[in-house]
Image (cartoon, rainbow, N blue to C red; front, side):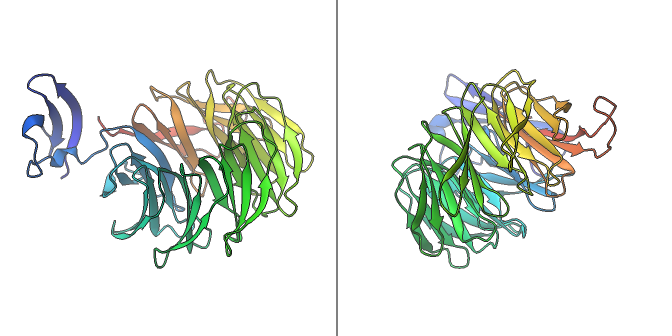
Length: 399
């Protein structure tokens, strides 16, 4: 049975660390003298996330999810039990961006501050390829829907396209004048959108690697971008407190959405593309009707910035993750808050539904993930379990 780290203690003199861990139901302790640390020292009990996590993501079926960490690893977990399945090791710096190749779910890609990306077998943990070419940290990545291409975005102002089958670089997307912090493919996989701190988003032809349109208009860094399902529209969010809707065919800005009083940190379409939402550092989210452009609801209740927002696959619910240590579940039709998901002790930076919409994952700076069972009862908001969620698994990487 693998060791479970309980406490991580620093010793001032002589310099070292003390690991208190549990194995086979027995509490044990291991001191490590840093002055005597060599490659031969047994530090097996360190094989757990003992540093903060960076991101989390579900596979399509929802039975597994992955977490990246400052400890340079990515871990694969069982959703239903919260048990670690295996650890993906090999990066030399923070593992910051991670993804399954949904809807297939048989591969995992990890992007790191070590300037590389790694492609793994999701079932065995085998490393297929290390993708080298970026000059600085990789901060965003994505598979195309066909699982044949990986896109990576970097602080070196470029994005790169990689062949999943061979691990070879297919194209470098150069043109941005600052770091790329957001990217995503359209449903057909023939276009990709990138968002940058240079205030612009760009549309690229995947086959040629050429820039098709520069989406200019924001007066601050672009924080988030996404295609709608049909691939006809792109939404972008910016620290200029606005979100913008763009026509993909012409590259023209169709509308500018104002109303937030602070930076827009995330934007998202629902699966049908009939609605989109913006999340802001002002502690609110704004839900829009795509066709009319009307703001249907302003979602108020958080006491801190909202850094992440996501729709369920049915488009009937959305979740918001906040620095106020809570995640909120909202009804898209009424704009009502159905439930406040509480339990984290620090900022929540990541949240997501699985593909079926029956599980929610939240990741926090308290170094824990929580898995919530989303209930589908259609009773009135406020009734016990009304369209809400209940925690099924909560686990910590250093508990």
